[in-house]
Length: 90
Image 1: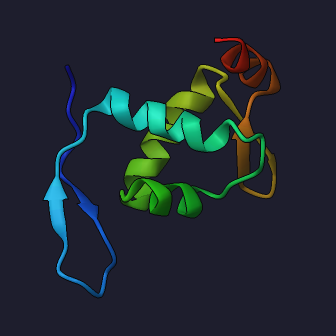
Image 2: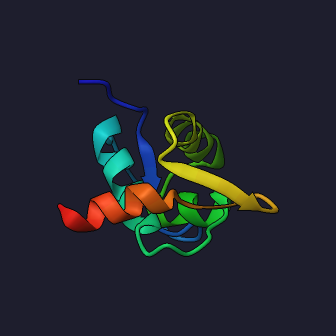
């Protein structure tokens, strides 16, 4: 399975621990954040996941390419309503 580089966990001011995340786990966590249906910025998502903005960009680009998410309002993202509906049925 594909692994991303070690992601920083914790606040910037404290001593941080690095731990590797599998890509599938990050995708699942991203969709869990977005399933509320609200709008989020890439920065909000990267903070919630404890990853860099660049890593968040890569994950969100993948999700956008396959229509899991949509960008509607000034760089704010949300889950595609059809995906949200499907997700709720699982």
